[in-house]
Each structure stands twice: as structure tokens, then as C-alpha cells.
Amino acid sequence: MSFRFLMPVAGVIFLAGCMVGPKYKQPTAAVPPAYKELPETDQWKVAHPNTEALRSNWWEIFGDPQLNALEEQVAVSNQNLKVAEAQFDPVISATTSLRRTLTPVPGTNIAASCLPLAD
Image (cartoon, rainbow, N blue to C red; front, side, top):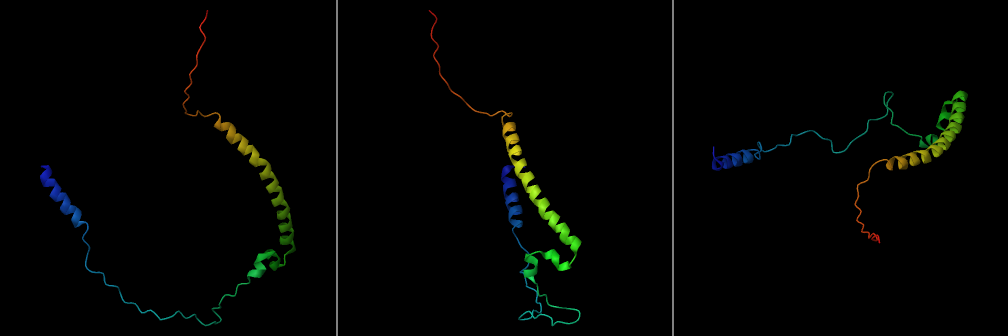
């Protein structure tokens, strides 16, 4: 097979990939002009979120003294974790910088020096 024969065949195959099927016809669907919510029933109720209650101590909604005590412990523990993290971060930084000195660094250095001749 020669190159002159392959080029037209490749062009026809390439152009055949660009062909599309029949004209697209958009299917018809019954769409109401506007969305209408269902009325409230005993099975369906429209949500009325109370976001103000969730912004503060949301766990107090349950009225559980044990949960309140646990939340107080967590508040103290979180501060201890923040202190531990603050003490741990410089150690990680120092370890990272020390590890960088162990890897070779490519570079160039051109220097000229003149040594005195021995008498």
C-alpha cells in the first residue's frame, strides 16, 4: 500500500467520524407554568428552621445535664489540644528544615583562584 492510497482513506474515515445522526427533536413534556408547593397536611409540613437556636449552645435544646457536662469538658479539652498543637508545630517545622539539609541540591559554582608560586 502506498502513501497516496492511505491519505484519502484516512481522510474519509476522519470525516465519517464528524457526521451526526438525524436532526434532534426535543421531546414534549407537560411542564406547569410555575411550581406550586403542596399544602400542609398531616403527612407534609413546610419547614420553618430555627437558626437562632443552632448558633448558640445547641445541645441545651435536649435538656440533658450529662450532655451539658460533656460539652463543658470538651470545651476545656479543645483548649488543651490547641496548646499541644501550638507546641507541636515548631517541632515539625524544625524537622522539615533539617531533612532538607540531608538531600542533595543541584547547583553550579564557578570560581577562579590564583595560587602563589613557590619560590
